[in-house]
Length: 395
Image 1 (tube, rainbow, N blue to C red):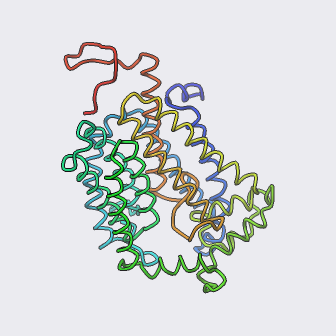
Image 2: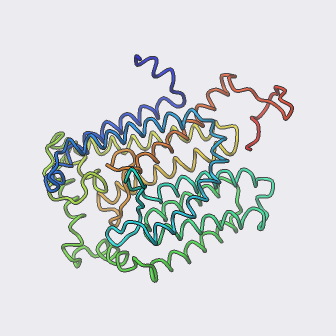
Image 3: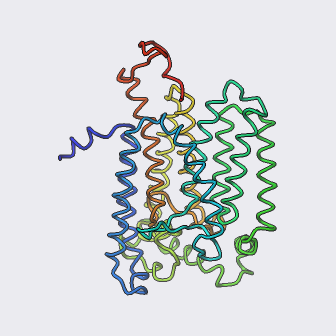
């Protein structure tokens, strides 16, 4: 199968497809360069990590392809199943999940013995569910009982369950939820109530949650690095050294030295390693890539004729972009240390797969827009007769 035939089977925004390919190639280079030390410690070869990472990227491409081929309106119905699974899995993870660094974020999938972070599923579930609910409730969007309480309840429950083990992810998801509420025409008074509830839950997690000591320590280390324990400031200090020694054009691919000292140079601090090897130029190019992705997604949102497609693309694109800039901000010292990966670049397992599905859903909305513009998608009434106007309502 030649390249032209492959491209003919992929629809949606071509720029987003190119961005995915660019990030995937960069990810392979960065992961191969950064896993030498961990491979040595585990008596493995860097090629083993590369092959595993490549398999995840290939699996991600497959999921992205099938996700973009599915009509985005089907995700409205799927969102109910995803939310139910999320509400079950998040408490299960807190109680019985794999505990790493005093945080229970992962559960092990039986048979294949592969772990996955349930908050990745929760992000996808909440965004699709909010997009569906806001679309279905537009006629009663100001009604507190019919619209506001179901929306506020879903946001608050998911936020609390994620925040107990992963506060940074919970805060980003809460921010995306507020953006969707604004776009979905929820009143300022009701949005303020959601923010107040979120603040109340946040304070409860910070002061009474199981990881309160970790949060306090990280904030103190960030605010007063000169007084911090050297061990606790080790990650951020090594990241700063990597960035400082990278210069304008970097040391070149595979020539990083801080990968031998920097904890998690293949995941949480992969951006620091990229700047060390590709310099300030490489770091800026990566920032521009994510901004171009956001811009292309905004075009998809504005071109979408239905509220559900617009909200879906907006929520997922905001989530991915905010996550990317949060990771890069931590790497350059603009925020306290978190465990947020760089989308499609950091080495990861199922996080790459869920991220790929999110890209695929955005491309599905874009594909639908293109087909609608080209007249491929037929508009019909309830009796199946073709009509002019908007697409059929969300089921």
